[in-house]
Length: 264
Image 1 (spheres, helix red, strand yellow):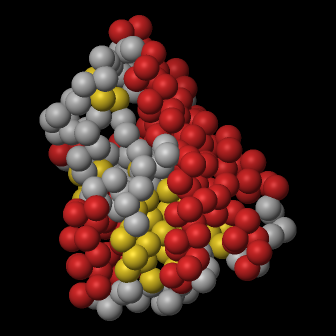
Image 2 (spheres, rainbow, N blue to C red):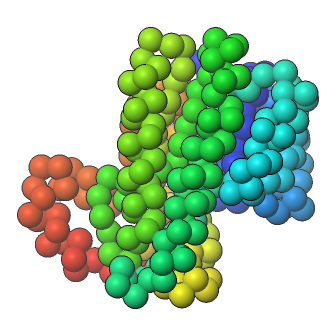
Image 3 (tube, rainbow, N blue to C red):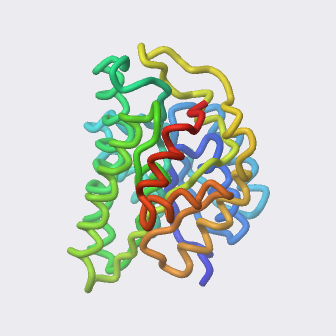
């Protein structure tokens, strides 16, 4: 399966997994819609993708500006006439104990990671159903499958995505709509740098575990492979992915180990 000439919309496309995914699709000559808040950085990504032969639409947006989502969908349709793939990658993490984290931090993370994610999906879904096909790829997290220290709001937002998209998988089982939930583990990106502290301030540094993670490029290749195979759920990462099996098969050992893991 190739994505040549398919219209692929990627949020959080200015860096990390989003940028790496854009470059992978550009290699297959997909038509790209690149979205994030930083227009100038998006343009830099677009230039790289265009050099690989991809046609790009730079569409700056904040996924929590819900009133603009329908407008943005129409912009894409005016340009490309269809939307074949939506990769919901925009998101933010946290670093703070549950008891000490301000409620406004919980709210902000949920707005971006969950409500912003599903709002764009709901805006795009009617077009996909109308054209008779589509592929939606929510970028969740390995912590969407279990709890992890200092990530209570982040984990909650990712768990919520699983409930939403698994329901969509059931509801559209007989439709030509692919929904592939991706659960990255430790990927070497700036997600920890951009995380929120317990008071809402920027964390501002790279976690040691994050720094040892697999590259965003390797992650992107694994995600594309899962998409081509239409896998409903895919865990991507290194040795840390063993925690998923421990949580499922030996929960008592999982909780013992997780309680001792450094969350930074």
